[in-house]
Image 1 (tube, rainbow over the protein chains, first blue to last red):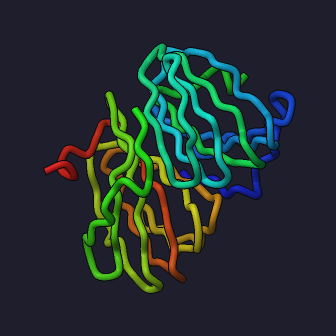
Image 2 (image 1 turned 90 degrees about the horizontal axis):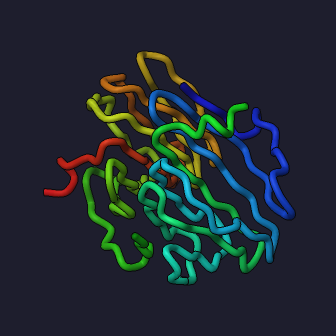
Length: 107
Length: 107
């Protein structure tokens, strides 16, 4: 199953935050998230496992209360129900991959 | 669990193909794969599910005998045991995320 990036509408999901749901299948889903400088992905939890890959820009990433500066090429793994969030330090883009799928995103 | 890109050694795994194993945890693993122009990821299968995100460049992607040209931002989902492969049309980079982890990569 192929999803071409330019076939997907960029959906606004928060102040300075937009996303595209890309390839999904089986127990996996990929979501591209675009952040304007200063935009916040509020600290939150979900039961899904997640790996994120920073495609461009940089973030202050927080997980379980610890903060770290991450930039393009850096990755992180989020265990089920681990509290995590980001603040974009510049215009930035990240890809989040979830297992299982975020069915809450598909409504 | 955070993995910074520049903390990981780029491992040569084939002619013009190098990879970095990035974040891993639970049932997930992220692998960055660098291809020189013309390099081939031979058509192969594995029981793991996979989502791939093209970070830069372009590929001729083949799955189950069908070919398609993909470029930066495009994604695909590979079901368990689906035959898939790529040919890099220029110097290119892709991120593969697997579930479960590719334990064969960790030896």
